[in-house]
Image (cartoon, rainbow over all chains, first blue to last red):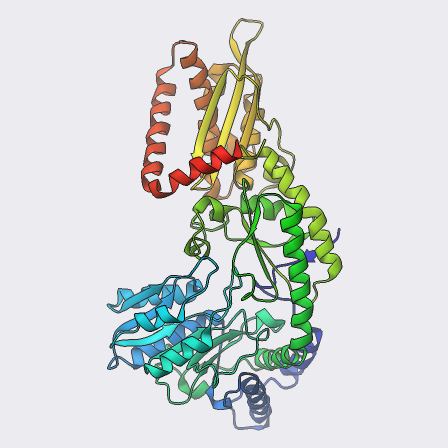
Length: 386
Length: 167
């Protein structure tokens, strides 16, 4: 059976060049990067080079990159770490209402500790308004956290404008760039970013490693306490093979970015247009223009997302849904509710996320299968058009 | 996550579609929560003269488990006496599917509730005696419906729009 993976926003397969770059660091060059002997030195050189490569891709300094175990960890460290280290500055945090759960739940945890949290609304396409950010900043605001590009609907936020405002108001600005790093050029200097999280496995690198960029001078309290690795901000034996792989993935993504983004945008547009044309009562969620090159999120009336996913799976197509039935808590996606969808509209929403190995033939196959699947499920649904 | 039996019913659901002039209809669930089941029955008599579920159909908006439990309950009920059909329990629906994920057990409740409501509808429309158990269940289902409607009252108006548009 033909297999079409369109869930690159969840995770990606590793690039063979990444695997090759990592391989020596499992057995031959296995040292602990803080050991003094030659094994340690070898690992430390690899770590330093990887840090330099990744820093360059962000226009940051190498010492501003902290390696962590996941983007969830990076976001937790950024938000809690800054707040805990800047208690003298204030007790107020601003986040958007469509952040990833690791940001929202970190904010909720802070609220439990007595901090004030403002959840900024978004418009119907998922955009945060920089004017709203400006309005929300109070005297005691410490941190603003707005994601670069949204996980579910791919909307790209005006982070440069938000960064400017935060810098003027002397408030720290953090951005979760998990979905955008490697796809959109990021310049932390130009965009006035103080903290940024990115993850390796979303860009054809290995799982289990991620980064937090922390601008020099930003005060941060570590969440773990240990033996000095990563400037004591994230002590733990450093995962050298994964970081080497991460750096290789970053290098490849940045070298191929322009060409690859052009290719993906054209496939994305073909998929969106094809679905909207072939399937009645289907609607695009998110922003048409300010959208990740690989994100397609469509709402189908009268049917439920989990059923669509499982039906597509029987044709070898992997996509994702944020419908209530597919979540452990049986609640519809907070992102889709925030852009103004009703719960019943959120139930029938589907995300396709394209990536490095997505081909034109894959898109054709989806456009052939999907109308059949929706038609079949609508036949079973009581709400179909008659 | 789903058993092969669940997937079989989901991929090839039995007895789905609208029924013309049903003798009884059961409508349960709420689109806001993500599962809606409509179940229709036609009532006939067996050789002994007892009333049976002669034909049965369903329409479901919902996930894999919702579609599979709807399909399964129609299979279990078809040809059974009304008395037996109204006593089909959620455990039986789940067990004959080889089990359901814990978070999806409520789908089996919806499926048996839809059947009970269809039988209740038939009995009350034809002014036939309604067993105490069934009446109690009917009242519980109505009460639950009210609770959900109260919880989501901001959204219920939109549901009516969707249903009108859909019908």
